Structure formats: C-alpha cells, structure tokens
Image (cartoon, rainbow, N blue to C red; front, side, top):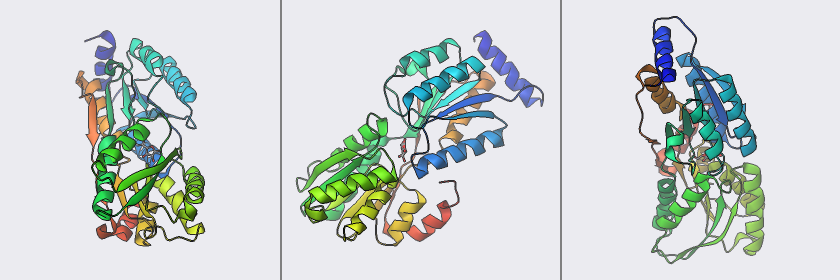
Amino acid sequence: MTLKTLLSAAAALAITAGVGQAQTVGFSQIGSESGWRAAETTLTKQQAEERGIDLRFSDAQQRQENQIAAIRSFVAQGVDAILLAPVVATGWDSVLEEAKEAEIPVVLLDRQVDSPDDLYLTAVGSDLVHEGKVAGEWLANTVKGEDCRVVELQGTTGSSPAIDRKTGFEQGIEGHDNIEIVRSQTGDFTRAQGKEVMESFLQAENGGQDICALYAHNDDMAVGAIQAIKEAGLQPGEDILVVSIDAVPDIFKAMAAGEANATVELTPNMAGPAFDALEAYWKDGTVPPKFIQTDSKLYTPADDPQGEYESRKDLGY
Ligand code: GZL
C-alpha cells in the first residue's frame, strides 16, 4: 500500500471517527446537453452531499479540451478522486497518466474511454451495445416481416454511446432484411439538433412518407424529432414509429400521447455505485471491478407511461 493510500485510509478513519477533512472529489461533467445528463448531475450532487463529500463540479459545455483542463485543475488541487464522464472515447491517455502519477483515482461515469484500463479505477455505466440491441429487436418484433425504412439519429460523434448503440441496433435487426437503415446522422444528443436533422430526413424521404421508423440514440433527440414529424403533418408513433434510449420523463409524456413507442432505460444514478467504490477504496484500498454495470429495461405504452412520467418528472431531468 502506497503512502498516499495509507494517508487516504488514515483520513477516512479520521472522518469515520468524526474528525479531519471531508474527501474532495472533482467531477468533470460533459455538459447539460440532455435531460438525462441534467439528472445525472443533480443526483451526483445529491449523493455527494448525503455522503459528506466535498464535490467540485466542472461543466465542459461538451468540449473535451475543457474536461482535460478541469482534470488538470483537480490534480493541482490534490483532490482525493476524480469523476469523469468522457464526452468522446479517445484522447485521454496523457491527462489520465497525470492523475495516475498524482495517485488520484479516476472513476468513469456513463461513457467509456479507449485508454488502458490501468488509467482509471473503475467505470460505471450500462451495456451500451445491449441497449441498442434491445431497441433493434423491439423494432424487428414490432414490424414483423413488413418492409421498414429506418432513419437514425446518432449521439455525439466519437462518443462510446454513439458507437455502441449503433452497433447494438444493427445486431438487433440482423437477419431481418425487411428492415433497412436508410439515413443516419448525428444529432449530438440534443433536442434542437434532433429536430433539425429529422427535418432534413423528412424532406429527403418524400415528406416522411417513405420513413417507417426513427431510432434515436437518446430520448432528447427523439423528442425534438417528434416535433419535426408533427410539423410535417405526420403522426409520430403511428406514421413513423419512434424508439430511443434513456427513459426520461418527456419520452413517457410522448408515449402517453401515442407519439412514441419504446425507450430503453438508462439510470442517471451513476454516482451511487461510483461513490460506493471510492469509499471502499479510501477505507482500506479495496479495488473494484473495472466495470460496474447498470441495468437497462425496455418500456413501451404497455408499461403505464403516465405513471412513469409522474414518478420521474421531479428527479432533476
Ligand atoms: C449514455 C450517456 C448519454 C445519454 C444522453 O451513457 O452518455 O449522454 O444517453 C447523454 O442523453 O447526452
């Protein structure tokens, strides 16, 4: 056990005994591009407060350079751990090496990085490929043998959810030659860009008459696209099926109105498992598994969407 770990364990013991400083954690958050992201931030701050952790928060406005600067600042402050929700999967080796050099554990939240896994303590997130596969399988089961031209709104280019959710959806529709992805473009996980790109899809596809379904990598882009479909004079959820991921309140609102058909849940509470792992690590050096997986669940109109909306609407989305 290194001196730093011994000191952390001693500090933790001191805190347990009711003396000494709270653990300080730097959180480099991507931004507030979606309702889901806002909920993750809200819950992380709540969890830190409940656990007596001094959380230092940085919003990167979806720019990797801002996240790298924030991590360097946390290292300079000598924080006890860093939470990182990495906007894209590449370009982290150098700054993660600096955190490792400073013996500051890094925990990844909700997205993955391509860096060697000895550069972070653990990653908390869902199986992003599985989420896409669940969405693809739902569509295949829904359209059965009918021809279905699909348009796809991808997440942020280069992010692990955009890469993996695309892969998973393609796995889900594999073998169903009646289903074809005819257009695919990033909407950067935002409502505004989801609407804008869907408008271009509708225009390019005979006013939307030739589109059977929309697959959006998150609900926020789907909600934006639903607006575009309605403005084109079509009925989302009927003329164009809508399947997406996150399970945010507004997709359940759309589902209750018959305007969305399926969503795959992603829990915004990534901080709970992350802080559990860190507290065990600080206490006695317990090393967590490299990946702590959160659940994914499919919701359709059969699952009381109004009730799901009510139960989620005040959770900070
Ligand atoms: C996925 C997460 C994604 C959400 C989006 O794990 O990183 O980022 O699905 C958010 O809503 O923008």
